[in-house]
Image 1 (cartoon, rainbow, N blue to C red):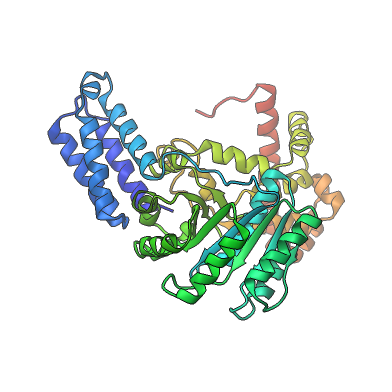
Image 2 (cartoon, rainbow, N blue to C red):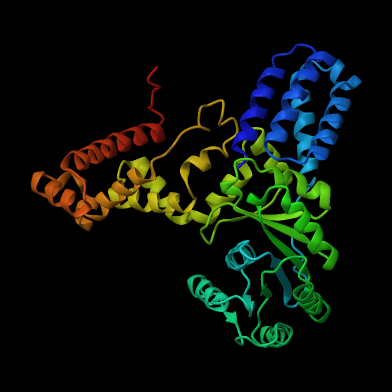
Length: 435
């Protein structure tokens, strides 16, 4: 996400940090590049104009003129203004109801039903409480079946009454949630156009009867600036409390994310970052501004790691590494935990200074990782625990079983032995840098 904008802005930052003095001339040049970068990213032109005016006013202020490092202070101004543009601070969900009622609305095809499953998954992981999915999309064929399938995949209960009146379904679902100790109700409504008066009236009736703590509009970020009209249309009919932007991982421009809050005053609360059921992230303006400017997002990286990596298992692996007793079974376990974090090339971009270290453009071949995993899985438990017993005939069998070659098996075993030695040296303090 934001790849094009991020690259352009990072180039500007690199230039401005070299300036010993900030003047109106060099600031005008930098702002021109920023303006073009934002417009190319499909940011609304009114937003761009206000943003660059604010940056210019602050960059030419007395504080910057007196600064020992004016370039760094300019970067701080850009980051602060970008954070403000994205919403200033994160807006957490209101979950005070008993149960808390969250109604998801949106256009047809916005990814609403999938998003409701992702959101339930986030709530369950973060708050360790019990969600209930409520099937109120009674118009789209197979919508109820899709929600039931998502519920089955996540092991989250789905309340449905077939194609009855959605308002009645909601009322009955609320009684069911109270009786069964559910902490959250996530209501999946039918997709509709914001100009469809009949269906919008249905949403208004659900809102009047249920009084949901949250009304979240799910919208496809690939829509670009058309999304602003959709948000305003829904917001006229319903008191929207937030927006969930889907498919942001596939949007290299990301202009809608930079325009939404400023133009509609509706906060972005979550963003879709992958198609998987764990592909929904809470939206934090400050962290996102840091990502866009290439400053990384170490907090998100730590959060992802804490969710995916088993602490006890990691401690045991660390002890084995220190003693040099790490085996391929441990290695396989660590690989599986790392894979839970998501694509490694995307994780590298969260490291502060990733672009300077050359990590931002690294492409990691997931197929190669899958091949390594296949080789290890083709070994017996004894072979994984004592790799030194793997001789010619075993290598041939392993290669056939994993659909690879003997050369690839040899390469993996050699690299693993080398890694073991290096890790033992590092943990014992005897490791020397090879330069």
